[in-house]
Image (cartoon, rainbow, N blue to C red; front, side):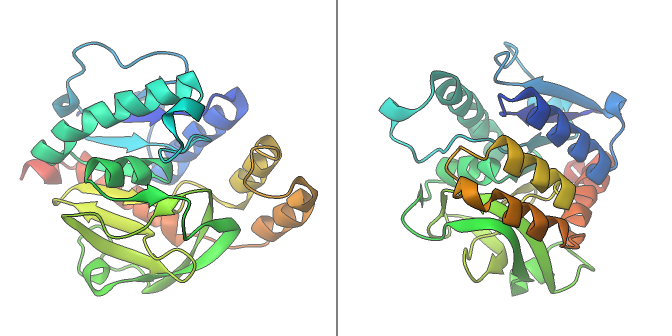
Length: 250
């Protein structure tokens, strides 16, 4: 059985470890089923064969693909270049990919779409999401409720549907919550791995990273802990189950 490749971008150990644990838990993955690479610590291995993996999962992080190059942290800039460097093969070979938040910015950028802070920023919290008609027909989303809540918190967003992409999930504040390219390349603006306690941890860790007024941290924490959010995790688990079974090779 081929493993999944989990690429992480978070430079904070506590945040990275919690995110990885959430990927395992919500995705239904055993530690032995994944190759975890923390790109803040190490570059991608030379000659990495993406076809050796059942799928690729890209986590979130404090970086923004839309930031001017001169202002980017050098580590974040290197990470961005390395992940974008994988996308031509991912798209050309339709390799199963699930980009979470930052991973959506990467996919949209690779497709030639616009990612910026111009519109569609969302505060920390749960937003009502809806399946589009295309989403309702997508095999990964089959059987899910047409309306559900998801946890979000970001500075940038996809501004219009990228060329060649299919719009799967929408929301009022930020319309492009989930897209697909080809048959197997997916990305979400929301965090499919995160529940209330996971978001509460991120609120504490990223309190001074510009996502919200630090004075609001306690209120935001109480708000996310009061939410019941389950469908996004079902999407992540569905991705794992679908591609663990080798659907992409059929």
